[in-house]
Image 1 (cartoon, helix red, strand yellow):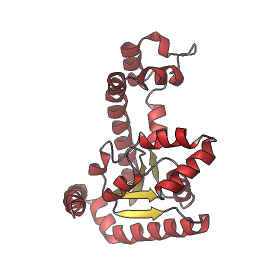
Image 2: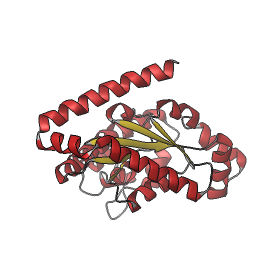
Image 3: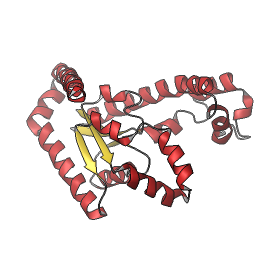
Length: 235
């Protein structure tokens, strides 16, 4: 099964693209959803967070107080690294489990919706990278409009992230969300058709019925894509 990594920048429209994919019945493994699930009451990750940061980061019902935890890690990089060392492995394991379940269900390909795909760097573990793009200025204007924030505040948020121009260097496919919704829909449909064609019924069936073949093909896809990505970024 081909796993396609979907990413973008804040206010570029990644979530919109993900929603469009869902309407076309494309299986989505959503990292944001999983990140919330792995810290629900009773999970090992929440127990580790409690042990690391204390009981104060829990609400009265035992759920994680995200606002309080955020105030701790936002301004302290060492604390943020501690939190990431707990959450990121749990999220990766849960994502892998979902991908395996989709493969067992007979899906030919799926999309891993990961905001920090490049920074992770989980891009090395997917067969193809799709970046939802718009210009930095349009990104800034959309963020200001969405959050009713000043230009200075919006700029500060953008500057805290990897620039979208840097992310497209890793892209195998770029979805340009600079135009209308109709144009975006058209690009997403073209992307879906390309993936369906790339996977192919015969190749999928052969690799699904004979798992070792599927594993070899998956490993070869990752190696080849990583080599091509390095060459592309050097040019």
